[in-house]
Length: 519
Image 1 (spheres, rainbow, N blue to C red):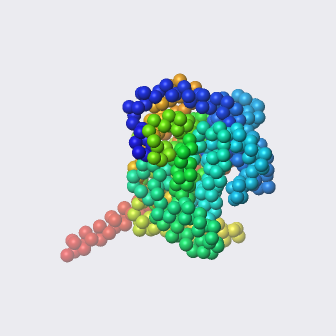
Image 2: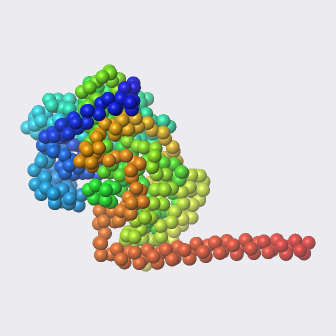
Image 3: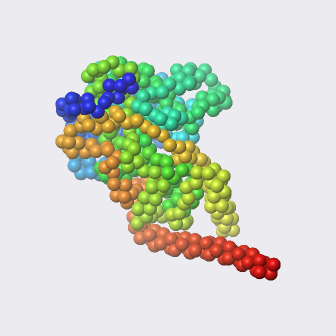
């Protein structure tokens, strides 16, 4: 084992007998999941219930939209994601118990009886809950990502049967670095310091110094996830704990429902904006890696990482200096931004409704050229379209919409312009420990090399259409015809534009030639 918790590959051959403990680890286990109603949490809950012989899952659920924890759980199980599970085991819901919680409360506001149950029964904890908005106010992001994690960790420390605590972070928690190893990096401002500032500063003061606290990090999401990592690495030392860093998670590849997703992250928003004909100029470097991963592959790696965290703690062959960290990304078959945007067109056989223009875009890494392109292709059309709406007596919306789009493009440009090198020794070693039988039985493939991206993207846009926007499937044919018309119009516009350019060049050349002859 190296000083950062990783292991050499030659060790794997000596510990393959540990694979049998994988089945034992999940058999009749009691699991606590925070963030179980979020995107990743839903996929994890479905996977555990359908594939693993677990005893019970407790979900910490916040009260939201005047709905109780039980009501939110019932709504969760009605989603399309659980169709396969409902068919195989209609009684699956009996294994899931909702626990009402408030992450802003001092002790999560969990009922004393429920807390006692968790402390006495829970063996495995997946801490997924997070505020994932990049432009969230720092104090709000801290409330969930740092203080919420602290409270969940304090609860987990009291658990009598705890076998594994897996904290879900992000691959970009140290994105200010060019090389990111499988270890925690100490920030200039520690989590203890920022928690203390949060306690004593009023809102105005906190907002005034927010930019100083964020420092070299690009947004409140990444900086609070970095603080949360350091919190876990420090407080959970001596516990069977680990930190899992997923990349940008996108819709499901295969299992259980290809194309399923329930929200749009940054790259997804850009693709949707481009498919609908709003976005044509993107600020980024098309050759840089996109670092995207399907949700089912991410969950497969997470369930193995929880076991591997337990296995490492149990064996403890060499003293661990830090908790094990899992950078879940591979170099091979990792798409570039250019490839990501190009392959999205594989799903245009089911285009989105109400498209304004055909799918066409430029990825520009020069800021000046991007600003010029955005002005010509975004700002001017926005004013023209709003003027037409004004004439028609309708509400103007395009200028406001494009301002939001420009904010998203600026935020995402940080990730689109940079290149990172990530070590993933712990991920690759962990992958070697799982036997072929368990890999097949539990559907645990998470090697990026095995992803057929052409196949994946055939479900990408249709999945967004069906599961996120919930567009009427009866409109697919109409949308397809409309999109074909937009394609023809797009091609005619390009031909007309380049014909005009050619005409002007020829005309200019002819004038110069005539002057030359006259002279």
